[in-house]
Length: 395
Image 1 (tube, rainbow, N blue to C red):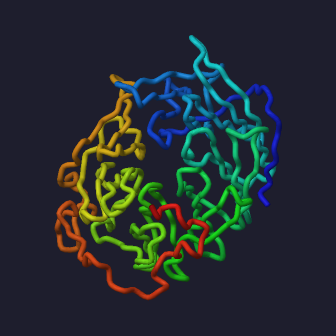
Image 2: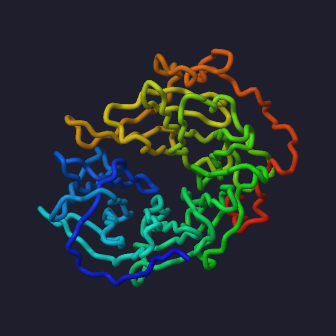
Image 3: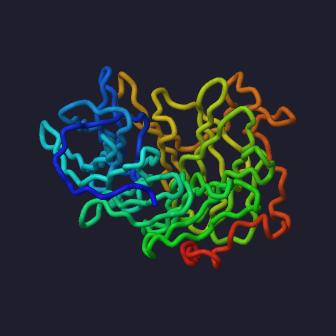
């Protein structure tokens, strides 16, 4: 078991932590980040569901230190996690006129120096928050906000886990990438059944199969696996509950770039292939944005806005991509791409910008036919009748 124990809520003396980036609630109403102020860092909440986005600073009595994480809650408060002396202290921050109110929630102690605890992505609903503690031989899922009596350990998963993707709108099914026996496979943890663990991805016995992102409406899964080419991971897609194979489009293979999906268009319940997917592309000439959908089978390239909080963003149901940014002139801004344009990648992107035949991926068609061929059974994701996910996307 991971060496973590609960401590009661208490006033604390030390504050800690800055991590760059931005965390956004599942419904896109609020965001939170650690904002710079000279050489210091302080929490900041962004309100995103009004006519114009605006930021509310939430400074504590001293600057935050490295290792601190923040996460917005659905009611506008901000959860902060501060590591100190082998513990992780959790509090809720909220504005109180000119100052910042703070509600201590308690702490999780990790007495094992090799155990690492981090916040999981914001859960659907916004009334609860979770953390993952990764130890030497097992990982624990903790409820750190929204419980009745402070932090509560909900599940113990054998193996070292990473990632964290919510598969349903009830905040019950959590997908984790579990490393065990020298392989990494995505599994599902049922938080309402005592942390019951079931397999999610098993493309081949010898492949590493991870789940970077999933859509809770359509069941679209973005999958990273080395099954197509052992030793080299590729980005593919599948549908939760489908018996069709995972697809690995050629347009998503960019050898000199790191391609990371970060947002999927919601609301496409019956048409997962039509979901727009936003990609962060990091290459030799910088970072930019790709927009792709399984039906389109090509990547449209967009320049990242100045000051983009890289890797952060969300889609509206109307297919508008929202990208938060902050500059010296604009402390809180959102760029909206209403209709992604077909643009060529930045000059000098090398293999990121070209296929093996020299064509830009923005104009490269997936050579796979519309109806995928019949693969061997082992190339299919685990059918839902073999996992506790049946009925989540059958509407």
